[in-house]
Amino acid sequence: MDFNQKLEDRVKETESVIKAYLPVEDGWAKTVMEAMNYSVNAGGKRLRPMLMAETYRLFGGADQVIEPFMAAIEMIHTYSLVHDDLPAMDNDEYRRGRKTTWVVYGDAMAVLAGDGLLNYAFETALKSFEMPQRDCARCARALSILAKKAGIYGMIGGQTADIEAENLGDQVTQEQLLFIHANKTAALIQAAMMVGAVLAGASDAQVDLLEKAAYEIGVAFQIQDDILDVTSSLELLGKPVGSDAKNQKTTYVTLRGIEIASKEQQEMSSHAIELLESLKDDGFENAFLTELIRSLITRIK
Image (tube, rainbow, N blue to C red):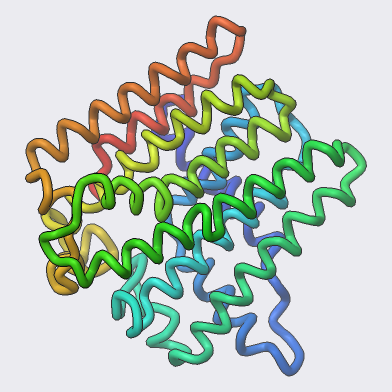
């Protein structure tokens, strides 16, 4: 089976897992549940839950205990996008090829939908403790990683720095930008791969290695996103291009130029793959995971 076919199958599997954990739309709070489900069901690459599942497989994981965490990390990622699109943030009207949540449901309900997804993510992850095959110590450690990487020492911290950088114009430094990318984008990718490894019983050294690799994957992924914001189109990307320029945001592209940014993005991706392939020495290999990461280098949407 070629990579593209396997990727399609993995996306379908991941979609099935995510949908199984979405809230049922009923009762007096039905509208916020509809808005939550609308946001998650908009599609997307499902990169983070796939990276989590494939890292779990890399270390021999084969149980369903990974599934609540897969759904949870996609809920957290989606909530961040719902809030990111708000008028108070990026003021974007399209996401994944259709109207953003605030456009369809209004500002207030979009805020609540994002809040709901964040809280429901942890409700969902906690269901892993109820599974017969669970290891409570591993589940607790995985939950701690997910919480930290999504919070003020991770994604929210990166988003804070990103907002404040908007007022600095061309005074934003490369160091600041790397902090933003490392936290706003890479932190959840780190969480995905670290959680998968922890739940499968990887050693501390292996988890640390994955944290380093995922940092480079995440930063490279965000640099490519910055490149696509300049070079792609609404039809291809599924969201407005030129959003960064419209909001006068300094990006890796504006700071380094497209050629240098592209070269450094590829170098980071290649080094991350080298780190992953070093695990072969310990007998751990997942060819699909390696190819998935490699595909991020050349993605066009």
